[in-house]
Structure formats: structure tokens, C-alpha cells
Image 1 (cartoon, protein in one colour):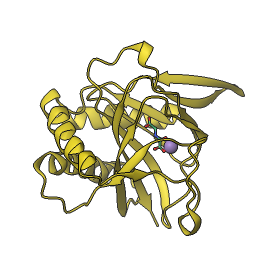
Image 2: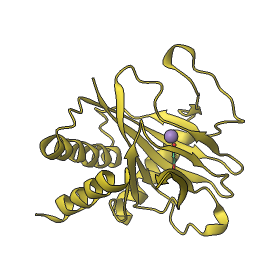
Image 3: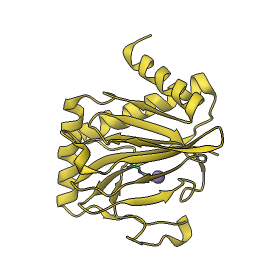
Length: 204
Ligand code: OGA
Ligand code: MN
């Protein structure tokens, strides 16, 4: 098994046992830095928009629930940094389809920026796409992130009928994935600018 396959296996084991998984150093520091450059360029040129909530047909913008700004990525992007990420993302999809028969037929993925004071209240990722969201994946891009910056992903799991909140810092290179239909989660208020890429794997 090559190192990437070992990461995939570790992620799958976590998903199967807990419904979520964390893999540090999924992206290298160079990959993170290059992505941040593309991210900054696209942000500065006004390509981002305020994220919405609700179903595809009536997306609403409500910053008391969700405050991030997003930009959907083009699966055919020729930007080198985006290409590396999209290819890694697709390699994970292919591995899942080969080993877990999840029947993932499509993906969607966007950059997200939380400015200072922004958050995303507790929710589930079951809206927006017409196809079903199977897995949520989030790639974090924040170097030198400290606990005082807040901005944690909190996933709510159940152990013996008791709810447990798992707090995950958005550290550069880290990949978190979880079952979209099953787990509530939130992003706590960010006290520093917070950068990430969020994706979903879709079945029919
Ligand atoms: C989302 C989301 C979590 C995060 O975009 O739906 O829950 O940690 N993001 O950015
Ligand atoms: Mn979410």
C-alpha cells in the first residue's frame, strides 16, 4: 500500500467506526501555500459570494446562521494548485468506489472564507444538491492556527444515546470527512480569517 492509500484506509476506518475521520498532512505545506495563493487571487478579484442556506430552488442568505463567503471550483480547472487538490479529491473518490462500493457519481467543491466574527450554526449537509450527499470532506488551509482563533469544526456524534461534541481545529493540511446525512456539525466563531475547501461526494 502506498502512503496515499494508507491515508485513505485510515479515513475509511474512521468513517465506518465513528461516522467521521480526520487525516493530518493530507495536503503538504507546499500544496497548502499554493492553494492559498490561488484563493487570495480569486478573492481579491471579487469571485467569491456570500454563502446561502436552504434548498437549491430557494437559497437564502442569512448571516445569523452562516457567514462564510464561497467560490465553487470548476472540476476542469487548469490552475495548477486547484488541479492538485481536485486530483487528490478524485483519487479519494475512486478509492472509495473501488473498496466501499459507495456509488459516488459526482462531486462538488468550494473554497470558503470565514472573516473575523463569522460562523456557521449547527446544521446538516443534506440540502442544495439534487443528487444525494454521501460524504462531506473539508480541507483546511490555516497555518499557525492557535486555539484562541476559535473557528473549530464541532461534530455532534452519539455514544450510548449520549450526544458528544468533537471539536476539530482547522489546521493546514488536515482533511476531515463525515457522513453528510447523519451528523450535525457547526463552525464556531472565527477570531482570525479562516480558509478551507469544502466538498461533497454525491450518489444518485
Ligand atoms: C459546510 C461546513 C465546516 C468547516 O460548509 O457545510 O459545515 O469546518 N463546513 O468549514
Ligand atoms: Mn456543513
